[in-house]
Amino acid sequence: MSRVTLQASTDREAGSRASRRLRREGSIPGVVYGAGVAPVAVAVEATAFRQAVSGERGLNTLLDLEAAGQRYVVMAREVQRHPVRGTVAHIDFQVVDPDAPVVVEVPLHLVGDAVEVRHADWEVDQQLFALELRTQPERIPTHVDVDISALRAGSSIRLGDVALPEGVAAVGDPNATVVATHVGRAAKTGASA
Image (cartoon, rainbow, N blue to C red; front, top):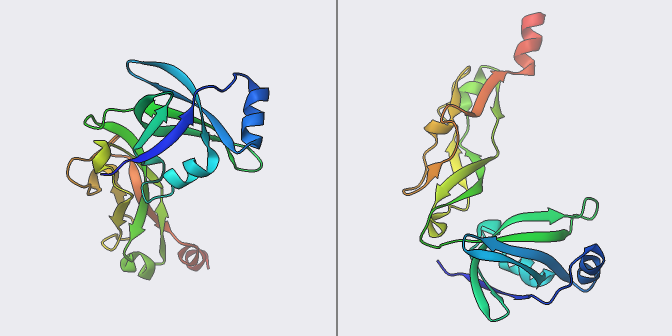
């Protein structure tokens, strides 16, 4: 898996006033942290960061962050956004070992058509929209597909039922409901008439 290189500066001043000035100038303040690394305050260009994480892996992209002559292999673990504008206000970069498993959140997509559920006037209710997975960085899937074609009225799909790629494991209760079914409006209206 190819990594994206991102340049960062380490000469930023601390404090909210300095952070606001950085944002006005088109940079995003952040911090690099991880096992065996003292926290380092950094700033990255907003457009370069957007381009780095705009691929199909999104925030799960493995980045080579170059700062003050050091190179860190990182992932953007927490991205704080402005509450009104939605622009990125701060980024936490976590140093990761490319050969060690990490826990990431990956979007969940429903595929297929639950024909029997529709014919019974029931509805499909997606309970989870993302899954936490443990895997090595190069094995992180862009998303997980859950096929709902075999669903029947009154049945559900649990986390333990979800097919995952080799080397990828779900984090969490295997009995957690991913997709459920429930009586639809048409069936409720027909029953009360």
